[in-house]
Image (cartoon, rainbow, N blue to C red; front, side, top):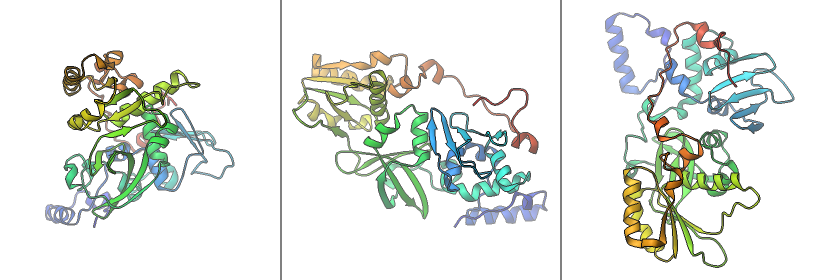
Length: 357
């Protein structure tokens, strides 16, 4: 069972106490949150864990009734791209630590980190917990007490919005999965396959609920002669989003069937189904695996197959195309955020640059 320990208790104790403390931490899984770890938590997720839900959404902004005061109209905004908040009623803004400072009326950073950690344990990334989706094989994941509901979580919808995905389309195509692993709760987006399994995704991990398989979406009515092939469901949702954005009155979403591989390794499972179509549109990734798979299918189906990746050849995949993240940009090293030392600098926004909302 994981617990919490105040950082104040760990400041310059004798060496034998440090050794003893580390032994206890290792044995019982006590968790000490750092400033940088706190900043990785999305403010929208944090507010959700406290019971606050957005009233409306406008682009990258989620609007809430302020958690800092009573109000009738929502004037508290969270920018999901910058992960910053702004309360127009009191003209205050900042990061998650600044928000905790206002909520708990304290400038004691160790105390604020404890408060944040207590409410966000289930939101931590794999690097912060003994259980890691990124480091375990799919076969070892345990989805206990799995519940499948309509996709409605503000945190998950916010994540999809950050990926450029149309929320209404996502609600139609996906489900919300809630489950436990080693006694701890998780929630994620679930995309169903054709044999009852799910591709599982949230901001922090990828996984699947077995059996893993492809997804074949067939339209009602007369059989379609064309099928569009995608590598992952984010690419499929990106395609639908692009179609609706470009032609909202007549997006032509049902003029063809769809196959989502859910992994290039599932390609062989799709071959028999694809053989029934006279036309195949291939929307695979612009990487080695995607190009190899496309060449294989071209050799097998000849002129029946059209390589659609030429329309986004400057991008890794359809989602990067939707988000306008070309290959040259994705290759750039990410800028490291500087460590903040002063309490006031951590809980107050920078004065010179201002805060872009």
